[in-house]
Length: 312
Length: 249
Image 1: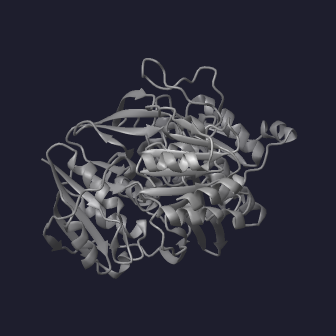
Image 2: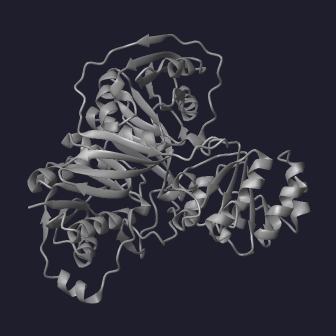
Image 3: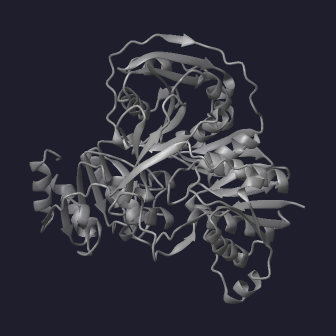
């Protein structure tokens, strides 16, 4: 049996949607037995959400005020202790998981597979390298513990409806005080979460200013879409960093992706290539975004976007 | 002496369109331009700025990699690093082994701060900095977009999924860089000449206790599946019609 421990990411008492995708990855490993670990101050609601995911056999809840806000240096020693006896320790390939999992791996003396996009067998996995320009098939040694991050855009969310038991556990390990949370500035928004939204509208440098960037909001409202941005638009200050889509931003797989005024640098295309339908609007007919777009429209975005909004 | 250790990895230049070899054994490297990993150049730039602000006395650029990595270390010296160390290895190295080699160098140099790129643009692992911090039993501040030293602590703003997070870490610590931390300076020709006189030490991996045996085995590389080229529409009405046809509007 392959015992798998998934680290739950959560904030404000809610389980991150990426965890349902980690569960899908875990159950696709042959002969798996899946445990979700919730490390939180309270975490009861988060544990219940995790317990409801189909495929989860049990949830371990570790309550400690030091666990929130989450700091990798504080969580890692607890997870390393919890991980004893597990063949795989999985986390999401979000900034939370990318920060935390290598620290856990180093404490365990285990190798890490980053960004697992497919499971071929219990020892063979596929992951993107060179910004997605190549896919590597990697083999891990049988019987050796492995840490991995799961590329959430590559897996469907595990459905709810389950009812796994929740077990409270205390982890007796010294926690460091050398790392302290100060603050987080997050733009609160009523829009869907960019990482998991079914529809995303992104704007690029062609929008020209932070003021003009708001042009795409109306379209996003009409389509019930999350808003994203290209790296160029974020670098230029038109949009905040958390909206960046691409290799170094968020890698997403929505049903519909609309790229407005985005030329389509390879780093951006890496972030959207799993989208079901890509729509591109750009005044440059030669822009690389049209190479991957399912529906392309060449023209002036400043007149086209309001026009499309009216027609929807 | 307040030192900053900066990691430099030799990778295929970010402007090169990477191609998989037909036999799947790797990617084409013959005749391909090699450069320092862009995130590492950002790390070095940040170290230089800290030295210019009087927060550091010496910057040591270190690389774990093949002999040819001396070229990227020379570039780092030309950019402004004071000296460089290459831990020479032949085979491909995984992040755990690189982190162990860096730990040996950290123990030797006792830096106040280690700044590394958040990931290398070849294997895209995003692991080494966190692993070094764990093995060293020191704080990590990953994906930094702002770094301030305040006495014996550093205040670091991090690019996270929710937005910008600020944490405070006791020094020494490991910081990994994100894109918007700074824009690295260009190397000037006279500095390339001067860099030739700066010390570049080559150490054998055995002296650092690097275990070269990889724990993971890459069986093959493949080109990613290509998306089919789609349709072009001529105006907004056609676009909306196409969306409706697909049930997307």
